[in-house]
Each structure stands twice: as C-alpha cells, then as structure tokens.
Amino acid sequence: MLNMINIPLTILADKKGFFDRECPNSNCRYSFKIKLDDWKEKVSDERVYCPRCGHVDKSDQWWTQDQIKKIEIITKEWVENEIARQLNKTFSRLNSSMRGSSPIRFQFSVQRNHPVLFHDNIIRQCKEWEKEIVCEKCGTQYSVTGSAFFCPCCGYNSVEQAFSDSIHRIDSVLNSLTAITASMGRDEAEDFRRYILERSLTDIISAFQFYASSLYHLLTGEEPRRNDFQKIDIGSKHFESACGKGYSAWLTSAELSFMTIQFQRRHCLEHCGGIVDQQYIDRSEDYSYTIGQRLVVKEHDVRGLLAIVQKLTNGLNQVKTDKENSPDGTGH
Ligand SMILES: [Zn+2]
Ligand SMILES: [Zn+2]
Image (cartoon, rainbow, N blue to C red; front, side, top):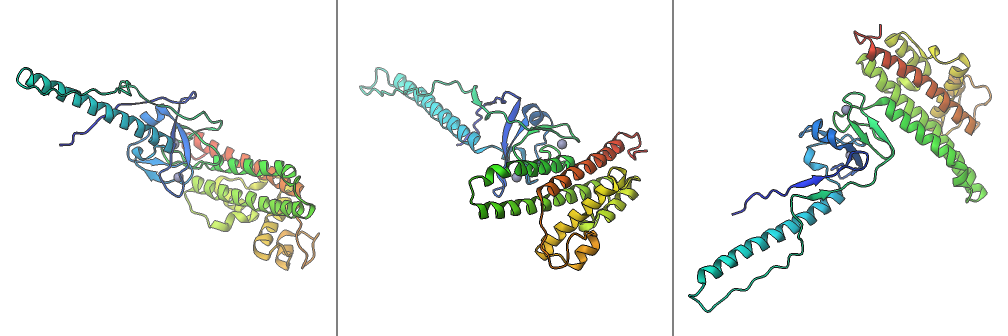
C-alpha cells in the first residue's frame, strides 16, 4: 500500500527576499521573482499570473527547472534514506526473532550516503536581479528581467510600466547603434541603421497607441477603436472628453505638428513602403517631400518623437493619478 509521503522543504529567499518562479506555459517559460512573503500571504492557490504572457495557473505549477531538479534530488535521497531505515528495522527484527533458533543470520548494513536530516531540505534562489516592480493595485513586489506586463498576484497590467519599458528598450537600442554598426561594412551599416531607425519610429508609436488606448479604457471603461490613437487629433479629442484635457494641455503646437508628421511617416512606412503619396502630404502637411519620394528617418527625429511622447504620457499619467486620488474617483 502506498502512503502519502511528506517531505518538508525549506524555501530560502534570495538576498532581496525574492523567490524564483517560472511560467508553466510551454510557449513562454518566463522566469521571474516574487517576494517570498507576498507569495505565501497574498498569492491565491488558484490563480497566479505570468508577468510576461498573462498565463493563469494554480500556484503549485510555477517551479523553475532548477528547483524541479533540486526537488528531484531531495526526493531521491529521502526515499533512499527511508528505504534503508525500513530495511534496517526489518532485518534487525528478523534477526532478533530468530535468535537461538536458527543458524541463519541476516547481515544487512546500509551505507548512509545522505546523513541529511529531512527537515532541512533547502531550496535556494538564483542571484538577485536589478529591476523590481511594486503592483499599483495590490502592492505585490516582484522582480523581472526585460519587459513584464502583468502582476503575478492580481494580473493587473500596468500601462505606465509597459510603456516605460518599451521606451527604455528603444532608447537603449538607439544608444548602442554606433557600437553595433562599428564592425559592419559601410553598406551593411547604413542599411542596418536605416532599418533600426524606421523600426524605432514604428515601435514608439505602437507603444504609445497601446498606452493611450489602455489608459483611455481605464479612465472611461469604454473600449476605443484600435486605431484611434494612431491619429493625433482623434486621440486628443478622446482624452478631452474623458478628462477635460487634450494633448495641447501638455504639448506646444510645434510639438503637436512634429508628432503628427512622425505618426504619418509611420503610416507611410507601414502601408506604402515609405513612398510618399498624396494622402501623406495632406494628412501630415509635411511639404518637404513630393509624391513618389522615399522617406528618410533621421535619428534626431526619432529621439525628438521619443521625448515628446514621454512628455505627453507624463501629463496623462498625472490625470490618472489625480483621478485615483480624488475622493469620488472622478478627479474632481
Ligand atoms: Zn508566461
Ligand atoms: Zn497586483
């Protein structure tokens, strides 16, 4: 008959108090850390969220590969030890029951390879990471590498966090562009540079679009049309009706015109291969190009857009904070 075996494990947090976890979704397997106390006290048994992909699973599904290996070793040692203990008991009982009545003696000795006491099976964590996040909604502390979107405890998706991660990533790529292209030939370096600058322009606008539509949804509860925030005037009007402030509350008209041009350039790069058409000129009012020309994305334009978009989102973040702090939650 099989009995349920209980092998006590002692989890030791890393130096900052975090516990390693890994997403069980085979498409993801993202590793993250969560404060051990939060894991014990706040996280539910039924629902844990992956910070990267949002996968939801029961709390016993999040062991890392490293932890699984350690647990396997501990289990094996425990079972071997237990079998040895049982055999010793059986043989000594057998010997004593046959004492004097039989010439046969059983000899059994167990090499105790693992003199560990099994109330001390320690699972240690990998080294601490730099980036720590505190969930705005439930206060759970977790630590991640790269971008993360969901709180492991409550699943809350921080729009500010996701946006600032994207902006930080784009900024790092721009900063390392010279170093990356240094070892390339002239043609290759030029093509690579162009590709990265066009990609960065697109990425900034995608990050902003995602941020603005998520924030609008948080403020109003309404689901905006996906592409509304690709257009400056429509996006601005949405916020004006939601919180009384359009983009001009934070940006000058020169900054708004610049932003409009860059947003239209992204549209032209995505949909027309960067070849200027009438629609581009009409919508951007960028008369520095004529129809049929190919757009050239300059680094200072990308950096300029990065700065303006950050300025705008700082303002919009404040609207959200004011709303959250106002007594009736309306911001008034
Ligand atoms: Zn995941
Ligand atoms: Zn949370």
